[in-house]
Length: 202
Image (cartoon, rainbow, N blue to C red; front, side, top):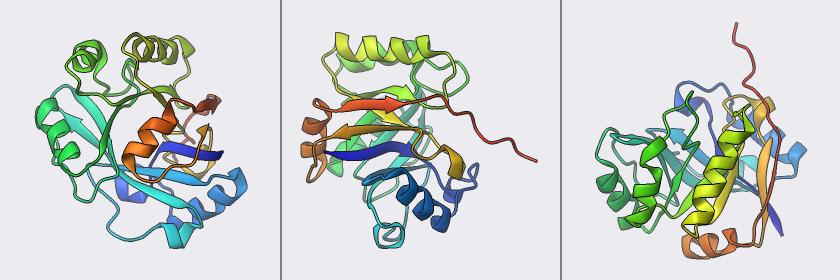
């Protein structure tokens, strides 16, 4: 079993402060085996794995017309503000998978009430069922309920924008090799997480 933080950001996101060196330090301190680096409207353009001492899944948190979606296992950036179905098509053309992050959080730009229809249309592969930046756990619970309703696996991420947030939420799951194997392994994952707000900015 490995530990995977499925949603975090570095300085490349524009609104985060975590440097590569800080990410490496936190990965070691938290015992993470894999991190999904999901920058806002940007993907990592170099091999982070050798720099931080853990495997990196390259992802992107993409603003769509319906709200934010995450693409994982990407090779190319997906443009923002496209229709959700076009974003999903571009992710899947790369062999990636589609996750709905913080879907019901009113403080973030998730897909919200559109989540069930997106799931019904087969456009969502996984739902973020625990986001460590959400204080109201009924919001995470609602995401879990929708995932279960549609038989979709859940992810858990710190959504860290600062070093202290990294590892606040993660999955303990079987090891995987590639996106399809990852998606299958998610069905056996155990969620670990705690609420951890963003560090105050000065």
